[in-house]
Image (cartoon, rainbow, N blue to C red):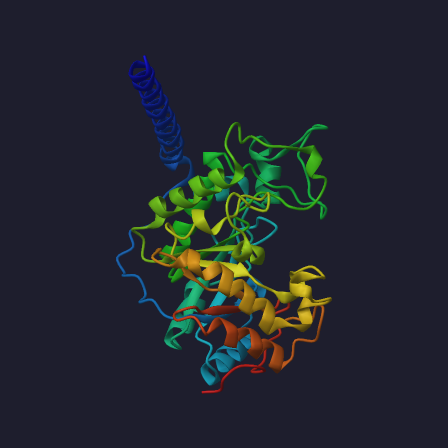
Length: 375
């Protein structure tokens, strides 16, 4: 009887395992079919014949579309890059508002009137940057998209009290489970690659974190949030892998310190990203860590220690994976005055790890050579 019971146990176990595998495969196939079938709505990019720009250890800074399109400002930034260790620029092509910031020809962008051409002649800008040997990254927000949520409310995250849910800034988000939202963003990314960008950096690849979270209606069904984001990362790779640009994801800085199923309740885990994208960019701004972190009353005053701890805990996830870590670093005065010493302290900790680049963030785009090595 013991032998028969054992055989029956394993037979039932294998049957359940096979059934679960078939269900997962069917769901993934259904999702990808929905993404592919909507291509006519969203359009496709022109044929792109160039090769991917060779990989490099990126040392960059962020610019808004307004700054990038301002001749005086862009010349100032080019001069700064040419005189320091900097070699890259990140430019908004779709920001927190959901506006597409160049003259997009994606059919649904045109139909929904979600473009606002703040960049002007973006091809000319990219050509000028490339002429100065500057690596050019397009920053594209994804699931925080108030404009798309307004134009297509059926694609928005809903509130239990009715209507579209909004965060504590009054911004609405689109539903991360909807293939239409995925493909809308894929189409914009493909078009941006066609314009000449070397890399597409996807931000807000997560569920919302601030606001009355008890009112959020999620459409995740029986999936965990990190499974939804993992599906999106894989679909991103499958849709863009053959295009001549690299793929990066922005994540919360705390992702470097989390393990197991801890996705910070927003769906972000390194485990789900490192095998399917080229770079992961955790936003490791010391001012964004809470009082008491590492025993510091004000972590912003201890940038070297904060970055060192995150890098030590997070980098093992990248070993043997496709992705390389490239943190966003603080270059703004919140929590402390970020002078040359504090900026350099962050950079020095990152550069202890081979091939780990970095990006400087200042929302107002006020940069100087402070903390940078001069060529």
